[in-house]
Image 1 (cartoon, rainbow, N blue to C red):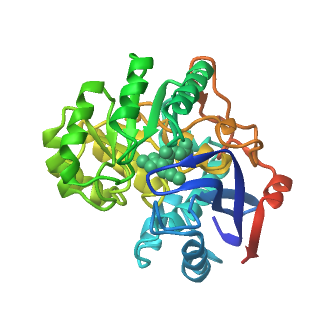
Image 2: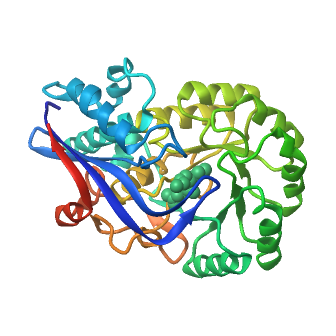
Length: 367
Ligand code: SMG
Ligand code: MG
């Protein structure tokens, strides 16, 4: 692939309903969308960065800067054989996984289109459908939380994840369990606790949760290992796993029994696949997380989630869970059995609607 031209879009999409985690309540979602042109084809990628550094150290501004000043110059005019070569090409730039992931995704899309394969097939995916779960933010009241869950279960979602933080944890989980005794349920703390909270976290053992996601610090591996030893409930790591190396450390130390793989958080699909393989060898199941992606990132995530060790329902929900109108066609829709179809067409298998992209674009650059 000879990289000829790159377009970079800062996009802001309106959420249907606010989304609140232990770190922020959001009404809109920012992101960077990339179009990479090579050999008469266009590949699309998404860097699902926030405007703030509260989930990840990467923000819209750092991502824009690192892509414009370091990563895009490495690509323009270059002949790239495989998208999987990008981590090595980008290695001199330390960190900034989301900036790298958006560009790498566009090259994966290009490579799959050139090969006449779906992205899932090019990655080695085996599933045609993936089990879909939904992540539900912190609500103003437990009644609202229960109402939301009821709605999503009625739509067919297979697993419910609720966000927790000090003051919105054991009571909320208990209320959900009492109302829905058998629903596959988990809780995500987004790093809101420390080891001092171990007694409260242990008290969640009685609710038969699938797992507790990222209870401790966003960059911790060691304390999670100590916590996992004290809990019956599996610990799942999200924020802490930023590279295949961090996954190796966590697996070695027993910091978790499950890993949430988000391609954007780990620097792209090549690293995501490597972490998938490491976990598979270690007998640790994985699932695909989400960062409120548009259809561009959602399609790439669905392809990754078709790999064989993605054995747990993930956070890839239908487009209408967040958006009135997605920027791709067709949008992702939930099947009656609570699954999403992995796109089968060449590349991402969805078409970016440029008219809709332009409508939500705040800033654009062409290189
Ligand atoms: O894409 O449905 C989605 C979001 C899933 O809860 C989700 N993501 O920590 O797992 C997580 C959060 C991070 C994003 S919070 C704005
Ligand atoms: Mg999480």
